[in-house]
Image (cartoon, rainbow, N blue to C red):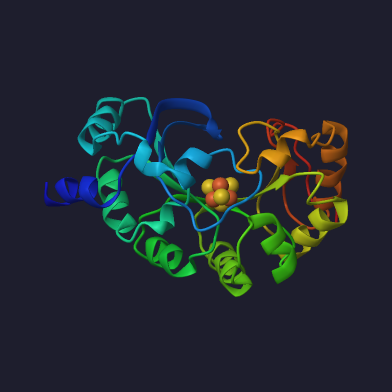
Length: 252
Ligand code: SF4
């Protein structure tokens, strides 16, 4: 009870989806959205969470945890998303309470906080990690996409931690035509060579943090498939988000 009482005070919940069949492949999950983020990706679809989170009403932690407990018979897991969940200093306490309900927990992260990530994995608090890789791992390119100064070494370290762990994971990249091309995707795939799963997400021109992005046309899905096919030469599995059934296996 101590943890539950404190989890609410230290990690405000700004969004909750009770069940989703598509968020974590093979699982029925609830999704929790936490506020704030240290990045400012131009295409971010959650500007309300990262710019004005205090204007959003918080959902009481007890309400969320009671729903998760109530659904325990048919909901397999909880996805902790954002914003950037590792922005919250006591995320570990929060996740510990979720784990105590008996569901699996996935963390969605931008990978800029390897210390928190390592700690959560080492303490067996995570069953899965989904990490965004914004761009090829060159400082200037990364900062173009993420909109703020970045420590590339932290992102690299998060990749190493995830690939060195024995938990389920997924790397993912949002592919926006004004920011990334096929060479960039190949470059990222080389960095995560041997990774189990790499998903390409189409940029969508709606609710973007930077309103200039609203005028950018997404890549046709055929182009994204070509990027995925090329990336699959380096990773074990690559596809376009939404086409997970069409497995592209490594061809080397
Ligand atoms: S898209 Fe970028 S700015 Fe938005 S929550 Fe994710 S990492 Fe943060």
